[in-house]
Length: 231
Ligand SMILES: N[C@@H](CCC(=O)N[C@@H](CS)C(=O)NCC(=O)O)C(=O)O
Image (cartoon, rainbow, N blue to C red; front, side, top):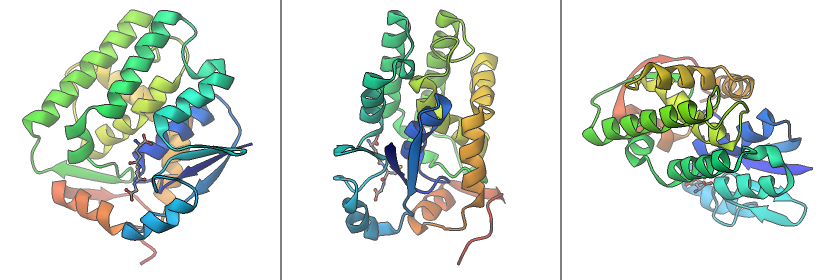
């Protein structure tokens, strides 16, 4: 059985990706949730992850410590991870790699916090450029492969890679230029695996100071839908 190590569901966008993928395509796994604890992670997370980061997948003696590498490892054994069509598969890999290494303004200025609703102090030009690129990328996939998912009829790894973006759109009330892009964000928000992850995130009572500080710095908290903090 796969063992998937993840961080707090409210904050950990990288953990969310393989978890959503595995849940959406019905790959059984045991979840190991590790709470973020500032610099203490560096030692505690080292017990299961060579970079002291999450996600990290264990499969018997194999350790895979990066979200994109996890998707590729799973794809070696499960054909449904990527689209079956070679063109759709190449596109899906490009889009996932772009998410993995790009969209810095979106990632830095809109830290993921699923249970909170925030009004940003400002939207930088870089953030607006990221949102325009996101919209163009999503529209391209949906038109090229016919939807409803980014690379065709089936939910695949590329959709899982953008699930945290749909959460950020919800948290920060972000707008994409097209109806097509917004409709895809809302489709992602209501996927059963995303709803399951979100429900668990809302029940979390742990708070991580570094993540909370990031969120407070970028805007005004309008609503906090999470279970009350454990203190
Ligand atoms: N490139 C890595 C990024 C992993 C990453 O940055 N994970 C964050 C959580 S979302 C983490 O573990 N942070 C802990 C820390 O920095 O102490 C991946 O794709 O898996």
